[in-house]
Amino acid sequence: MSEEKEMSFLDHLEELRWHLVRSAFAIIIFMILAFIYTPWIFTNIIFAPAHVDFPTFKWLCKLGELTGAEEALCAKPFPFKIQSRYMTGQFTMQFLAAFVIGFIAAFPYVFWEIWRFIKPGLHMNEMKNSRGAVFAVSFLFMLGVSFGYFVLCPMMTWFFSSYSISPDIVNEFDITSYVSTFIALVFGSGLLFQLPVVVYFLTKIGILTPSFMRTYRRHAYVIILIVGAIVTPPDPLSQMLISLPLFLLYEISIFISVYVARKKRKEEEQMAKTDEMTA
Image (tube, rainbow, N blue to C red; front, side):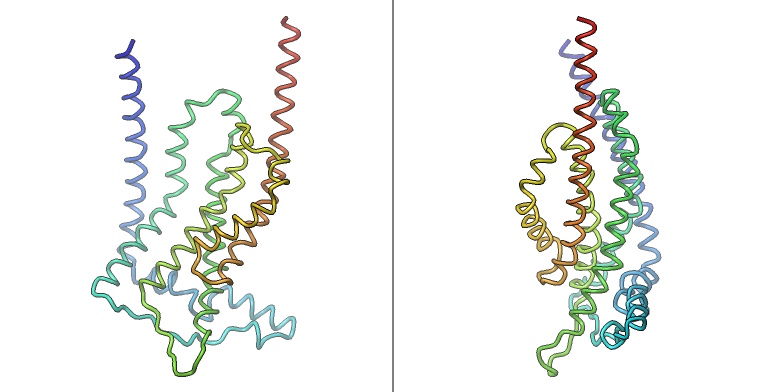
């Protein structure tokens, strides 16, 4: 009996190992591609939010033309340079950027592999209620990544490259600072946008309730502000830019919690009626 349990446990570990190996292999493939095309990626993706022809700045300029606020909304060329002050700075940032891009590109497949490992341990009702989990998690992650890339990165770059306390100070950002901040904003946004999924499963297992979320809404907003400060650079602008969509996601999560709680209550009532009939 103990040997069967031990073998069963080892079989689970072996299965998990292969899921992780396949996930790592997918990340490495995209990472190698990103490493090969590093010059194009840095020019057209990573450094793109620092140029006035970036789509976000074009949209803002069009909005400025429609509202008569071109001076305020049309970005001017950014007065800063990016330099590398460390011997291994460029190589380290190339490796880090390639890994993060590889992980983002492979994320749907990686989560699908993790879900394949978790799914057999679920009950029929749990499997039924969690249909579309891979799509939902992947969609929210990519939505968060897009928000970080198209909103947070250009707004932060615009603000700090134009910020000056004296004309004698020249803005020259180190590549390690720029790339690390870029990754923190993009990747952090992708993770934070998983809030509705987390609320869904926590409500499903009974840890969260809609009334709890409404009662502690103010506390949640404070936590969101703290989290926003942790995953973004230490400035109020970036903190608010990441916090505002999280406030919206929290309110959406309340509706999700209400939906899940109602559905769960109906299922419990139906089970109770079934038990009464059989008794």
